[in-house]
Length: 172
Image (cartoon, rainbow, N blue to C red; front, side, top):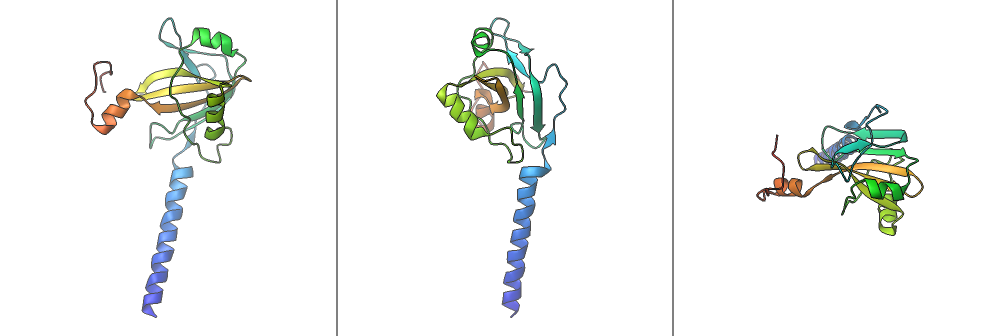
């Protein structure tokens, strides 16, 4: 009888712990990001190499202090993709990161499919927004935009212990 009670207590404890971890990962750490209306969406200019604001509307975003790659945002823009490809730096190899299910505007699988199909293009938002992390922006041909953060090559090297190259910025 005592064995059944102990086994039940272990199972209940494990379920409670699992529920707490799930809640923490999906809900606890995320905070809404307040839009400032001017610099929420930046793209890196091909000529200057500097990020600059673009025209956008309907901006919504979330972020978490627990990880540098938890930032997600959605917006709309009236700017055309042909004009943007002539003005802003493309970003190669970006893969949208999953967002919590409750952040409904950001569907990583759908965004990835649009990138693969060529109906969405990915641009460099801000390189090294913090060491080893780039902010990237995908914009679809119908003007929907998505923002997330990627670990760049310097970040990969820093996190796996490989010596940093000369092209990596100084760490803060």
